[in-house]
Image 1 (cartoon, rainbow, N blue to C red):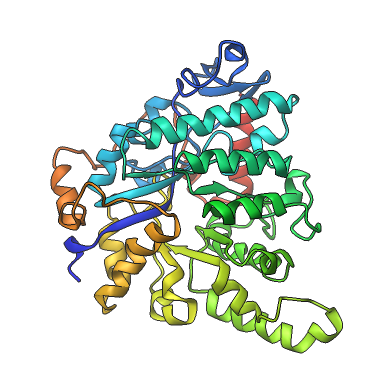
Image 2: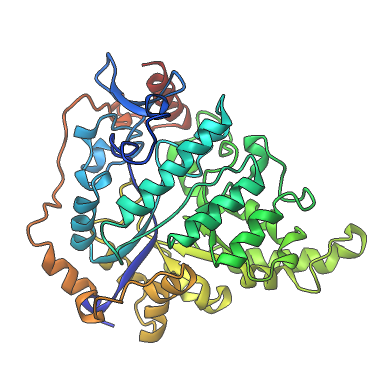
Length: 435
């Protein structure tokens, strides 16, 4: 297939929430208690919630910057592309990248909403979660039908409340929610706690909703030491989601909910075949004494029945796609983070898909995502107006060149021209917390 003829749907991007997002979605009773943005004495835009500053407003939102400016900043709206927080500008950036539709994870509440889970007043937190979801669905996504895929945050401290919010959002057309890869990291019961999470799984199956588990939503990612080069940590991070996958595959609840769909977001795909082979071997070798019950299935069958995999550049994974399951492979861009393929996504994914039959290209680049997330991107448009070539024609005036902001940014890589370590990144985050 020609690159210009591909249709791209990304199941992993990110939104940097605009400062006015709660204005229309919180009642006057709670308005003065809603999160709000201030500019602190250091010139950083930060969210305020329950008397606390939440730094790193644009955490790693570096699309449009030259690579030497990459880091865990920026810290103000002026330092990030308007497309990170303004939906009209986001559509323009998507057009420039030839991307038809995009699912966006939260930023300031964390990818899975952890900010709310530790609130002093959980009733107030529930109000804000609902307001966030309404903004995300009605404004962020609703302003551009067929282009932005809704994703909800759930009040996971109470599975019954979470199920109610999931069903409420499903009625609004939202068929995805963000879930922790390790619930115990937030102080909740784990995936093996009997029927604790059953209300959420049942609602997800009833409403045809995907549980989206993004890398980094569990405990702090493991690293050998603070002196470990940050590239080493970043390289291993996607594969670390195999721990979550294994935890769920050997749990009891997938057998009770055969229609449950779980996305391993930003986890890549090339590692999957060996992982499944290993899981099957372990189960055959040890299940007699471990007493693991998988409902008569092998672990690899559990994986293929329930899991969705995602990639942005994974040529090895595409070569062995039949071992993974073509019907469960989706594409992602990761805009506006430093791993993002924007604005060269078509070129990147086209290289990965070289020699792949057209029907499989369609499945991987968009058809699987639209089917699995129950999202209609074609109701008002033909394929010819939704492909890479047509969308890029709409964006001829979009500036995709690199720009250095020069507004207080402190790229980590500038320090002493030495290898940046995990400790350097954590120190920058700690400094942001302090000021």
